Image (cartoon, rainbow, N blue to C red; front, side, top):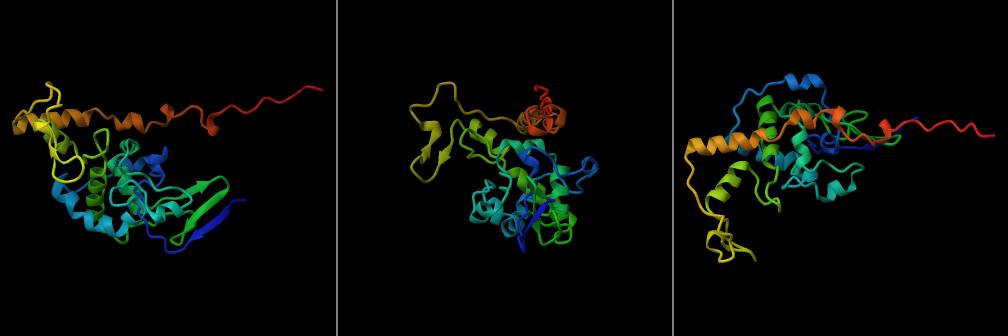
Length: 236
């Protein structure tokens, strides 16, 4: 028998609450969904107030899920800034935002007041279709780049390298990177044309094959579910 733990009124959008933990809550047919809006900075920026209101409580403004609310949950909300989010397609993120997600740990079901088995509420009735697709784009922007996770988009990564070094305006590391005397001689500024920049971004975007990342047949073979059953002891 599965025990139930109720979290009344918990309002946390976990876009892929458990998807980026290694398995997707979205059904295969979710991949057939299509966004009616273009991908652009404007669309992502439009979703920030929605994210701050409905998502940041659990995921944090930086997407890293290091918040007081997240610390109290039985299953940690997805870190939206880490590489595991690449295993999710935009359509799957949209589906989870729309329909919510459930969590099960052992024989315990963690429940949201929206319904049995729900640890995050569905937002299909709260946000219209455009708002949900905009939120998908904003979540994508939370993916961090560089070794310290300090750059949010590939566009900013290209700007960083083309400038010959990052300019930090405040803090202990403030300064103009291109003027740093310790900078490698191989790091030099360059001025790509708009076509060159688009080609670079397209190439970088092609380096992640989300189909492979989401293929369960290529997942960890040593999970308990896939381990062989113990042999029967026939000794007398």
